Length: 236
Image (tube, rainbow, N blue to C red; front, side, top):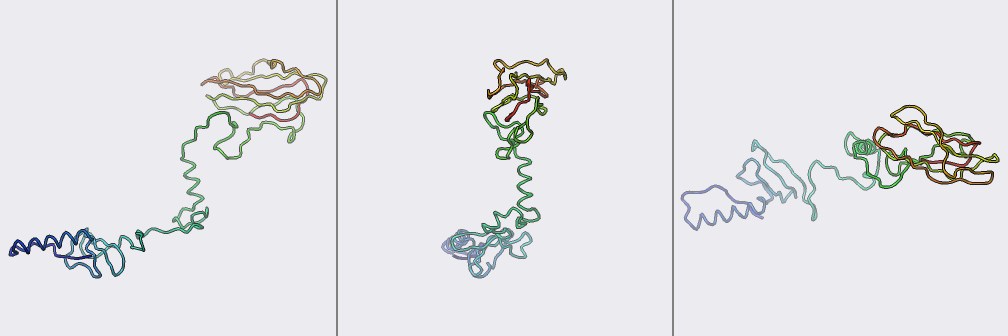
């Protein structure tokens, strides 16, 4: 740790000039370290204040020192930066970050984050992974027996699949049929029976019906019709 003059003296001998330059280089190497401020100062000059254990910089007007940070035991702590405890960092409602709480900050990040590309099938109403969406359109447990199920409107450009889980009839015989209303026509198609979808009392029907779609041709809605009330659950 050292401080030195940076002013050349034309009257110096070679040995004196060498000693002066050597002292200046050592001072630069140690950021002008010392318990008191350097006598010679200049805008932007660094000073390692060993008394205050702080790194300081001379201001632009060369009239004072700006504290850049503190030198702890083996660490540099920048000035003006809050140090969060673990509890503060995990508190979603804390305003220790400033005027914005962690909850608002998280919402802002999620709002502008790009949607994740999710391979494979996923619930049609899921916005982000883990948001709790199930894709259930109708469930016997919640709505009871019905004769037809109409899906919500689907977005264009995606492929959809209707999943049937343990669908049964309370009549002697029934047939599962589907009608779709493509966006391009806006009208319902004639009902089409599923291959092998005829079932009788006691049968349980489960499976998946894929609805391939391309841009401009996505099915807007679809209706699943049975010849008798059906039960259990369906998911898309």
